[in-house]
Length: 338
Image 1 (cartoon, rainbow, N blue to C red):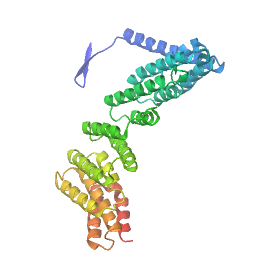
Image 2 (image 1 turned 120 degrees about the vertical axis):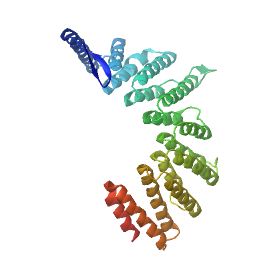
Image 3 (image 1 turned 30 degrees about the vertical axis):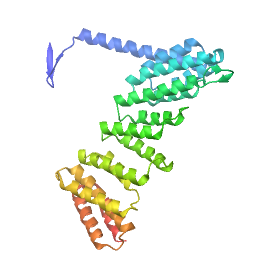
Image 4 (image 1 turned 90 degrees about the vertical axis):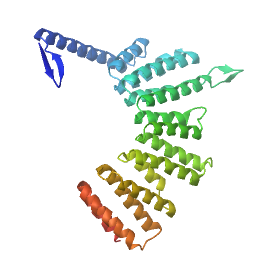
């Protein structure tokens, strides 16, 4: 017999089929519990054997969030396997660990403990074979280069995976041969161009720009204008998304540039006039207008009653549109009088 639910036909299972399914599930649970008991018992006895190592892999394939077992696996490597291995063998073992966790990440891309184990593997790998009596960096360089490739493939699969973004930043900061910041800026351009709502890419871009400005590789004034053009395109393309608004506010900073402030206020005012029925868009536009007009008041026109009145009117509209934050808007009004 079949039943239809949400336009999807489903077969009604017989009592015998349900009982068999229940038994299979019970067998899996029993197997997992027995395996867990075995592994934890070996851990307590400080069993650093290859058998214990293989059992941890079986258990972690079932439950990759079992951080105690990840810790035990690393202790087996440090206390049982590495002491009996050559540097080349250690490098091969750690390469296998990275391959194993790559497979795990495909199924569980947001499990922190998998990313953490990969970090440990990279940090504990040998540098490389000796060349003319001097240790080379061949293995280490190859492992870190491959790791950057893996992190970027994970971001291709899910461009907003914050764990992958954080891990990628860690890899970039620790590679034996660093990637240039101009290359990194180009990378964020590609990610933002593919999806304007990629908050992590905007965040990475801001960190990269600061480095380029501080090192003198980019002119802060010219490049900031270029950034305003980029973020303005994002605001007009998807004004309901917060990522570009937050980046825009970062670019404005403390509002020391009056001309820049007035230009961006005019741009946002024009944006507000388009599609005025979008609630989220109106919220972001009006909140930004209030914020930037207050910066004008604080930094450039402290006695302007016109600016104060414009802020008060905008805050009243915001309170009507967004009653959940009514108290906040009233507080901002009071601040204008101080």
